[in-house]
Image: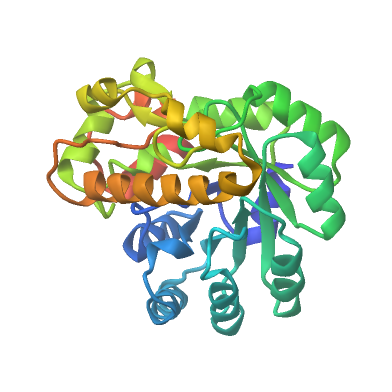
Length: 315
């Protein structure tokens, strides 16, 4: 199965540098490609469609043999830029698209027309079978050790269940910070791994030195789940500020979430407020430190160039 991912993306090693909101950028992905893996950037990291177009063109210029690049699309109604982003990517071209938080049907249809592969985030067998039926080229199996919005199942349980019931490659996301972790996921049957949090502390990352250093100073035991960012449980570093504001939704939010008519709007407002707080913490000096990360930062011991982080995953 590991060979299937390397063949699918024409990469040397079965690793995808995961798309991370605010963190991922052209420089990171370029270095990932040079190191023989795939790299991915959230389309939402670009404010305009023109900026997204320029990023796709830059990565095409920087692409090297043995590397691969793609973009992540949020495909539900919360992303009002979705249709424009998909159109740009299909026009400019990339090796793959990773879909999240919604039906990938239209993305698969349009991307396959121009030869772009589509991988879909899933957290269980039900959704894995659904996207497989829609024509997905692989699934990103998000387990309970992932950073950000994670799944509920352990890496072993999720991988083995999906491998036993799906015919497309299973890429494991979550809980990988070193080569031993990569080997473990492959041994479970994964075709490859998607690795995010270790790359936050990369020289090329688009975040503050304080955020990067936090990934060095804190470890797996310092990761907590919070409902205060997007309305959906999300993993963050348990900084003093996170401890101060708490990790549970307020009673007002819980009450409004029970109202069918208001639930969607409440979630959209919470998502907007939470993303703004996350952006400020990641890109400027602020006491409101809401830093998203997963438990795999346990293996992060220094701020390093992307190429050196990749080495830790393959050697």
